Each structure stands twice: as structure tokens, then as C-alpha cells.
Image (cartoon, rainbow, N blue to C red; front, side, top):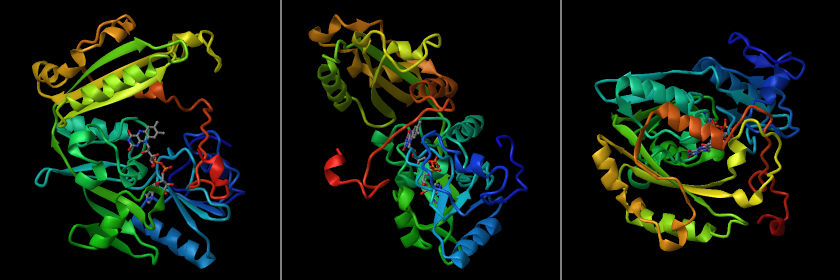
Length: 351
Ligand SMILES: Cc1cc2nc3c(=O)[nH]c(=O)nc-3n(C[C@H](O)[C@H](O)[C@H](O)COP(=O)(O)OP(=O)(O)OC[C@H]3O[C@@H](n4cnc5c(N)ncnc54)[C@H](O)[C@@H]3O)c2cc1C
């Protein structure tokens, strides 16, 4: 049974009406056949503590899910207990005095971005709007402009509120429980506690400028190496702070809503784009910072598709592009082979 689940419903057993809907609440429609014994949806820290104690009482492992964007659905444990943090501290608070924000683990990138925009502040959240801050922050957080401003969890997150395995609630920062603070940052799916809140510093908001140059690299992606080399070389010539560069290959017809299915009618239409962004106060600054991307070598000039001016983008536009690159909600299936998601895979098969 699909539909809205009341926040007052907090514990779901396999026979509960919404159990299957909750079990499958991942971005990947390829959800493994693993069935937790109980699914808990806490609305406060006390519910999280109850869930941790319940798992201890049953002697079963705990999985934690915030946004369900880890393609491998690692929070699902057969006969385990799944803690779904969707309704836990689902807001962003700002402390004007310290210029820090506090957010719950299931707050989405688009929610934090919207709040920051209203506040006139910035903090390097992830690129895709639907990713939750819980998994993003713990996994390191390759946030916007990371090449100069560092990984979000390393350089920006200042404190965590965590329920640790013995069921107690602690604060972890550079001075208090600093070992847990150290262990959490970059642990990703391997963290041993349940994070109930994150605290992070912010800086004044600026403007997002972007320039994108697209190359027709088909057939068979013949010019892939040349475009990648150009991206890497010009990236090295670009100042590190407040900039970022991304490379992407795509078939234009995948963005044509009238064409359905996975088959590509013209494989020679493969494109590759270099997207460079700058977070500054004016277009003049952005043009200077991104000027290395004016250059196109002779060998690629003939396959350039259109001009690549520096343009101002709203976060909404940036997120729309991200959603086009990784669509979701239509039964998309992702498959990842790794010894992390299946330790029984023979090593030679992990390529
Ligand atoms: C479309 C898309 C775009 C992405 N873009 C970026 C990007 O720009 N930068 C980047 O760094 N990453 C990016 N990622 C990767 C993403 O950050 C990770 O997959 C992250 O783990 C997703 O977090 P989640 O909470 O949505 O996922 P979940 O599947 O809910 O969580 C992933 C794992 O994190 C742990 N976890 C989650 N919440 C908690 C918690 N509260 N307490 C303890 N452990 C917890 C669990 O072990 C869980 O299995 C992207 C992923 C996708 C699908």
C-alpha cells in the first residue's frame, strides 16, 4: 500500500500496511530482497534511543537511512532494524551570533539551499537536490567548490549530535568526544552511531556563475581523451578557491521527453561537456576566474557545439540540470558491484 504515512506511526512490522513502501524508499528501484524485522521512524531523539535499545534487546543489527540515495541500499539488513530519519529534526536553524546552521539528517540538499538563500548565507551542500544531508555529510561531502574549500564534513561541519551504540546521546566536536567526531567524518556507511543533528559554519552568499562547453565526441567517443585532457589542463590553470570543474558525457536524445526507452538510435551523437563554475560577486570576477576555459585546441575546435559564455544561474536552474543528469522516481535501476555491498563477490569480478 503506497501513500502518505502519518508521522505518528513510528514502528512498522512486516505485516504493517506501509512496511513495503518504507522498505523500498530508495532512489534505486533495484532494492535487494532484505527484510528488516522492524522499521522505526523516529520524530525525536528519544525515539532514536528507543530504537537503538530495541535492537540491542533483540540482538539485531541497525541500519540508518536518511535520504536513501546510497545506490547499494546498505541500510537494509535482513532481520535487522532500520531507522528511517525522515521525520527527525527535519529543519534548518540558523544562529546569527555564531553564523552556524543546524540541520537534521534527512534534510535534503534543496531544502538547505532554499533556507540558506533566504538567509543570504552559503555552505557547500551536495549537487543533487534530492540527496539527504545525513549520508552526504558522513560520506565526506563533496560539496560545491570543494577543490578549494575542502570536503564539507572536514572543513565545514563543526559538531554532531549522535546516539551511540550504548543508547546514550552525545555531542561530538573538536573538544568534546573528539574521537567520535574524528571517526564520523568520512565514515559514510561505516559509522557506528545514529546522527540526529549536524552543526556547520556558513559564509555570506555570493552568485553562481557557470560556463559550459560541449563537444561532439562521437562516433565511439573518439575524442573523449582529448576533451578530458583539455578539462584537466585548464582546471589546473584555474584558481582553486570558489571554483569547480565537472566533465560529463551524454546522448542528447536522453533529454528529449518524446523519446522513450534506453536504446540510442544514433550512437555517433555522443556529446561531452566541460562545465566550470565560479561562486563570486560579479560576472567580471567569474569571467576572470574561468578564463582558462576560453581556450579550445585546434583539434577540437571543429566539434564544439555552440558558444560557452559565462552566465548567472539560480540554484533552481543548477538543480534542474542535476536532476536531468540523474533522473529518479521512474523506477530507475542502478547496479554497483563492490566488495562493500557484496563481500562474497570473487575479487576478479570486481573491476
Ligand atoms: C543523484 C546523486 C547525486 C549525488 N551527488 C553527490 C555530491 O554532489 N556530492 C557527494 O559527496 N555525494 C553525492 N552523492 C552521493 C551521496 O552523498 C551518498 O550516496 C550519500 O550516502 C547519500 O545520502 P542519503 O542520506 O541520501 O542516503 P542513505 O542511503 O540514506 O544513507 C547512506 C548511508 O549513510 C549512513 N547514514 C545515513 N544517515 C545516517 C545517520 N543519520 N546516522 C548514521 N548513519 C547514517 C548509512 O550507513 C546509510 O546506509 C550523490 C548521490 C546521488 C544518488
